[in-house]
Image (cartoon, rainbow, N blue to C red; front, top):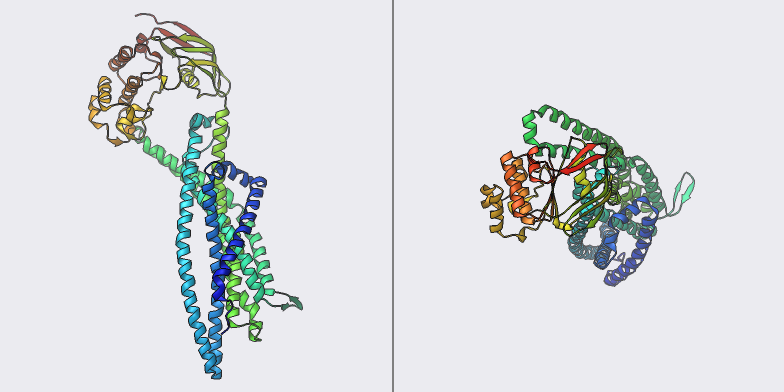
Length: 616
């Protein structure tokens, strides 16, 4: 029995095809990718988000990995083509056998049996190669995703943390919502969908080219309403898929915006739930369950509203795609039936026509069927690009000019304003030297805490110049200290590394700040912000002063949660243990004044007074 291909020479032909296809596909891919990156908005966003992954000293590994994935995609197409020819031979053997049985031709029947068993052996070989290829391909795709996601997460996280962007993005006009979700979820969606859509598109296009040759060889003319269509099977499938794809894009276009809203409303709802969890005790004290429940359900209603919009649009999109896909099954048989009944094509040819028609239809339909995935991808791309832009813009916001001083604090014409331009502090000038202690007083709303934010270069609505010791020689303590996740040792030493201080030193310091009951829990990992009371957290912050021994420490209501006796003890401890440290305190309590030698009174509308602390 004559076979559809010279299977004995197929290994050489396939290797040659893979080499040729790889070079051509790679060149075309690079050219098309360059055009998309330059000419499309989403291409430019892609390059902004992840361009550095594909350039630089280590980028050759990425390109080598990508080349291997491309080779695997081409091998998938080649095996699909070979399986279509195997199907041709298999069904041709059935037709030959049926004809031989009908005519009583024993030689033809033997030839048909030989053809069948050869086809069965060929199928076993092809499927074995396919299985090995699929396992290797799957590993390569997942490994590529993981490697890319690690790089992108480090890039986005580092950029978000750089220059206090995680704080200063709140001052950008278009405030970025839920950066945590963008870093955790959108990086995953971006990397996986980038690889999936790219390889899917490449596989689809190469499949169309490869099976077009198959369908071209099998197609014949077809007369419809007096018009003869040459190569009818090929022309019809191309026209059918092109029209259906244009309509699908029109139906699916709103999904980009809907997916963006889905991500945002879902993240807002999750954030509200987290806030309730974090503030559970305060809510319980206020008996605010009813208000919180109403707030949560209101946010959830927004999630459902967007979800219904997604459902209605997806019903249209999926419904259209289903109609198109199901209608295509009968076409190749309708087109080739007259040629089969007239003996112009074999049963194997009919089967291969259906296979080629289906492959081309599915490949061209990839762009239609993947529109929902592309919409989700675009939403994640927009969110990641937006976060990077906001982080960059936040670093470009104005801030106090800073100069490094060895052991002093100087403020030169420092001005602080509200976002609306209202002046809080105007041209503040002062200088502090070792062992000086300044307490900042004033009515609520006069800018005491805002002044500390400005001196820390966090507040963008400020001008002037601040001089202070660089790096860890300057320490800022907020009213409620930040306690990182991890063991107690990490919480006490923050922001220093936990291995920098011995356990004996930690135990001694905890005892000095009246936290001796915690000395045996240094290795215990817990959410310490939930375990320690506000007063204990403030005492822990004073322990950080003893460990870091900074040249300057700024304290914002740092003893508001402890009683006056503990407050006196903690300030005395600081003045005794680190007597040369410059202390700047923001406080409402008059009992804090005695630990300072100067008082800065903010009087509002920009005016201020600097004077010695009066002795009681």
